[in-house]
Amino acid sequence: MHQELQQHINHFITISSEELNEVLQYFRPLQLKKKQNLLTEGSICKHNYFTAKGCLRLFFINEKGIEQTTQFAIENWWLADYTSFEKQQPSSYNIQAVEKSDVLALSYTGQEKLLQQHPVMERYFRLMHQRAHAAAQFRIKSLYSLSREELYNIFSSAHPEFVQRIPQYLLASFLGFTPEYLSEIRRKTIS
Amino acid sequence: MHQELQQHINHFITISSEELNEVLQYFRPLQLKKKQNLLTEGSICKHNYFTAKGCLRLFFINEKGIEQTTQFAIENWWLADYTSFEKQQPSSYNIQAVEKSDVLALSYTGQEKLLQQHPVMERYFRLMHQRAHAAAQFRIKSLYSLSREELYNIFSSAHPEFVQRIPQYLLASFLGFTPEYLSEIRRKTIS
Image 1: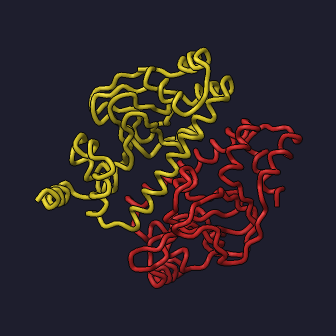
Image 2 (image 1 turned 90 degrees about the vertical axis):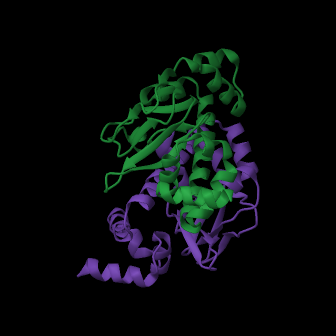
Image 3 (image 1 turned 45 degrees about the vertical axis):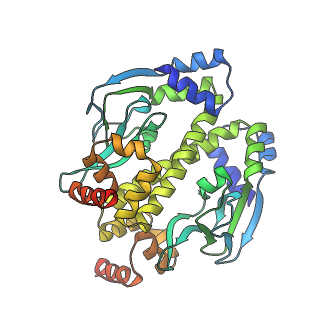
């Protein structure tokens, strides 16, 4: 599963194959079962996760005791609670595998060492965070400006395979719906 | 106004004063009047802005023709529409000075050259985007989990000076309130 990350790094930066081989040593492969937890609320987010295959989700438990999903990471996306990761303080989030997933984990101390030894990787992570920052700006705008139905329509046009693939109750949670409301919109869209 | 940026860079990375002097050449100082525009919807976001003094805001015009503020950048924060900036495509946002402000502008081509000539700056920008990414995760969680009143209370405890300083109608817009609702909450909090 290092191969997926290798291709992804090569897509974004110029790095020799010798150096890239050294870089890949910092990542620990994990094979996750569906619903396996990588982070639970109250513990420290010690790793930054790259999804090689499958899908992760970031969620918190709201006041009503309901899981609220705020972010997904499918293939080639990174996921962590970056406040907890950066400050090495307890997280208010959970990270879980949505489906059977292959993931590469980079520890906080591993990342620091990696970037000291291979500063070329600063560019890779700068580009990853810049991309995620742009995606978050779009998401915040959507939460302010779109009706729930528009949100669903834009999201499903942009990511049709993803919408087919993930459990509908998680998609509903991510979009701020009840599962019943999502079924209603889907019926409307199909008919 | 290069001095503020110099201090900020020195706070986050290790760089020689000679190299830092060269780095600072890439930034163009701008003195902005209150409400001066740096980006208007439909044009390309050609610069990444560092606030040395004052405050910028990112906003869009919603369907009802009302300005919706989604982000502020006070001293030592960066602001751009990063989708438009990264892809050099038209923006759906506006950037405006909230008050008289001193800003440093780094153009898209300037940033590319800067990072080629001074790769040490990749670390600085990686840290800036990581921090902004963490802030956006917190903001998205807040939009899902908090009532408007809780949002105001948490925001004003975290940033009391900021709440005093910016026009109340902008704070209301940022928090998703009407200005009337904000006045009501403030009265309640004071009494």
